[in-house]
Image 1 (cartoon, one colour):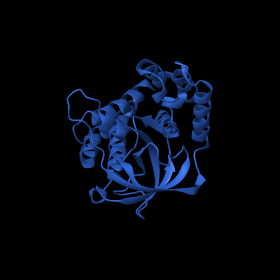
Image 2 (spheres, helix red, strand yellow; image 1 turned 30 degrees about the vertical axis):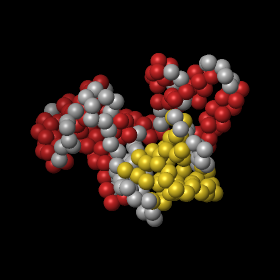
Image 3 (cartoon, helix red, strand yellow; image 1 turned 135 degrees about the horizontal axis):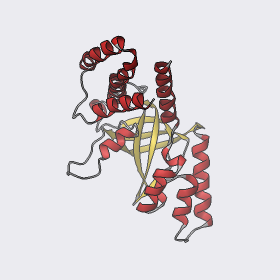
Length: 255
């Protein structure tokens, strides 16, 4: 079991450390010798998990990169509809939130149209709440990071969270009927109630962070602890599904 897990992990890490994604045919060619070895020695079948991990990682990364915002949509006034898919965060005079895209100027999520974007809106205007359905006039751009060596890898963070574009609400915001994400809305309601009950308390941010798993509510050290141990801050249904698929693959090789 540990050999299979180590082989799959090595394949994934091998792709992640490369400066660019390898060609799929190159990965297939590298898998041929391992496949021959596995046929010759059945006890070596776990070696097939090495190219399988590389192919899986490369495919997942390629699919995500293909859904990044197309350049023709950049610096344009666009109409974006969808749902607020995160807890809004107040930073300075802005409120930032993630947005699950329903359509972008009539285009459904797919090639060149991201399924999730990160938006900001100025405080004082109508502020979207978690799970609400909105039509927004926005300006978007492709994900970009910082060029300073050793700086926070913002583009990598966006990639990890499946965000294919960033932008801001430029004009017009209309609330549409319907809501999603009942658990997210419950967390938002708890955060609001705790904020009202502990207004002015220096530990209110820490309490809110521990209760609802909101990393933005505590200081740096508490956020790190929360990120490592809090289930709402670290677990998603998508990651759970990936682990189930992986364990199913391992089990098939064992039998």
